[in-house]
Image 1: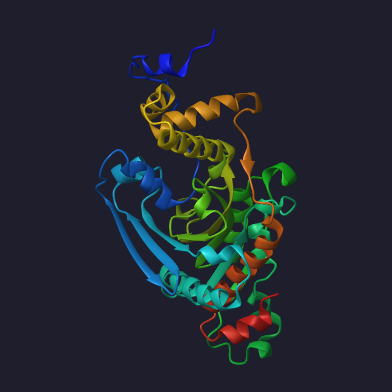
Image 2 (image 1 turned 135 degrees about the vertical axis):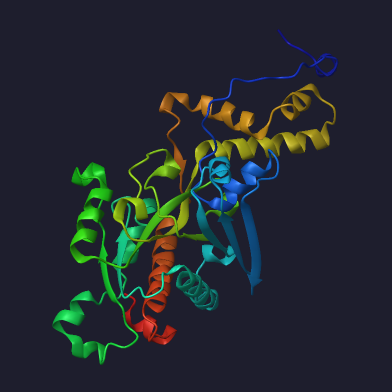
Length: 343
């Protein structure tokens, strides 16, 4: 049956109520979780602070109550997001600014009197978009062995921390939960703080490959892509855990939903008042996203997408994070020193 546009315009539309599942757009970023939650109204117990330095935007989100934590789907604590559009391409001046900013923000999160640290590189080194953790660990300046076997390399040792690093692999390759591996190492070497580096999933394409997130609440590997593993946090390990991550993938349903939104927005501008637009306008963002997810049902809704330049980006951002961590963890180290020891 063919319906003309004129007939379609005369259709009286009824409110559309779709059965919405409990799933929601995947994101590991606290700023995105806050944006999604704010659509339903103000959230008490969440504070946001923003500042900008030479094109780099720093957003600090503090979640102070359990109610707010449930609304956001994030744990109580501090989340710092550093955004810079230029991260998507190699820019040495921007890289230096980001290194300083990231090092400063990391120093703020480090506990006082943290003399020893363990850096954990989470992720699968055989999957480019998931290899951030192992790539950062491979570039770090580790010193734990130097204090024991080659102390002369560090002079009097002032301004240097004892740093160890480990890439524990993933459950599918090792047969061991990552948290179990990390807990065993923590119990053995007894660090004062653990820093976990991992690739994240974003809700917005605008934040893909241009955002770095830090938090003091630990991390749950695989949460952003629906592959929940046991959390690596203070409750699990008994020591403070700082998480550092970069969104490298986005849910395919998000891309399709955003594309549909843009198409109908343009259609509404060119053909105002048509029935299809009115129908779409009655759907919430969550309902539109859920419709796309249902289309992806044949592949179990398990499709995430990475940009084609992910290889080059991962090399650049892994170097940037490792260099920042070298500066933050070793007070005696300058940016010039970090250039020499960051592999």
